[in-house]
Image 1 (cartoon, rainbow, N blue to C red):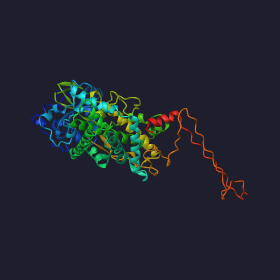
Image 2: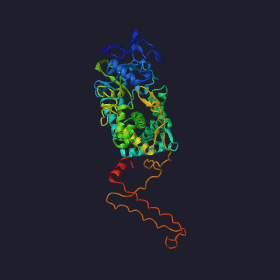
Image 3: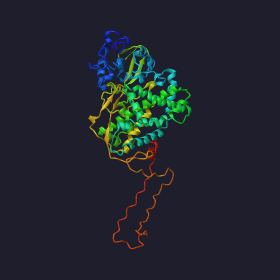
Length: 506
């Protein structure tokens, strides 16, 4: 293949010449498929593969998906931004993808939940995109982030209460994969649907396994029931706002947008939570910066969005016309993978991939252009409060294995930490309505506000003799224990402290 090729295979997708013949899927012939192209789904280390592709082809490289479907991987930061921000040349409407139009995509393809066209803003453009995206943006804009933080804190309490008395836990399987789903179910208006099954279905669907389609059907069924319920009885939740928006979304459109918001926010936040917690537990400098105030939790989250974007790649964008990108000639109907993971370490914008990126939000973790993630601030809030709240509950949490023993599972879509085993001092469960704390008892709340007189401590009761008489009215015994000092009054919180508690949802 040369940079002048018109498609990832160098031939039209329907070509039947000998160049399309090669080792069958699964053959260990160096992971190569037709035309000598790399099979992304067979790669053991996608990070390494992306760098090899960058070295061989430059910022845009040809590769293969499942069933040897050709695709371009956009590796460059500038090239990804151009693709995202040029709707005149690139669309997300999968129906123009050449293999799809020519019947090469099987109905049970593992990526079908991502490939199949759906009536939602992610696959629309022009006026239709504005109509659908307008409804999503309006519903997101009505979310009260103080209430959201309260949901996160209370969900943290519920999730941590499941394992806090054990003294050990897996912060991926028992925390990072559960907290975002619990919060998102609350936001969408279906808190009763949160359980282990919906978490497992969401994970399975994203991984593109053989059962991904069944898991997708389960999620769609739940959201279909929710849509019908809220259509009949709207309340003050995200789903009802979508239904009642002037855009007039159909039930199918509501259901698909709920699925988009639920899965995107869930996967983004679950990976982000796990990665931030891993960094805190494995990098003493990182933890010291947090504890010492040199780095805030939001800054830590942004750093991890550079280093470990929740989605490695997203399928996909499609060329609406013949064009050129990154030195490659792209045919009309060619598919392209938006790839934030390799783009975030593009040596042209980040010569030192270990460099501190604090204050820099030009990463591509949430996409860009017309299809930029509408719920990115929801994900940030869940991750920020979730990390802070967990460290408040378990301040002495430590990793139970060496960092080198941590295992990742990798798919084309994401790189996912399998487990994060930790140990800590066993602690009792806490009231979910109370602010997460490592103290066993919550401090006494002071009913005081600006302008009111400061509360005075109650006078200490006079000590009494065993008979109940006041000390001094009877002779003293030979030995009298020294009097205990009166407890210091609880100081009322300052203005700044009370503002922080209000902002965090308490």
